[in-house]
Amino acid sequence: MDTYSAGYRRAIFLENSGFDTIFATASVEDQEFSFRLAQKGYRLVFVPQAQVYHTHDRVLAEYIRRKFYIGYYKALLTRWLPERR
Image (cartoon, rainbow, N blue to C red; front, top):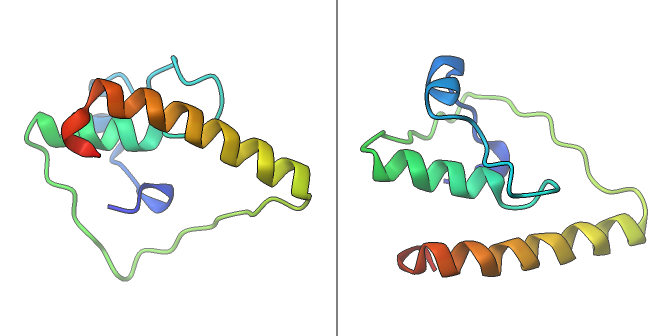
């Protein structure tokens, strides 16, 4: 599941404590959440007619900062869940 565009039912999100707050910035919190749901047996389903609004970084420095934190937290996540590499 490409998690940047994933949508979750509110009740499911809340019942499973939402995103882990260990991630200090937007990075891989969505991946960790989807992995956690999958481990609990939830089905993640692609819905081709779903529409997602996604903004992009406007400044190179923002892009570099975001990519740095994604890499940093992705390394942490793969240590927690090596089977998801």
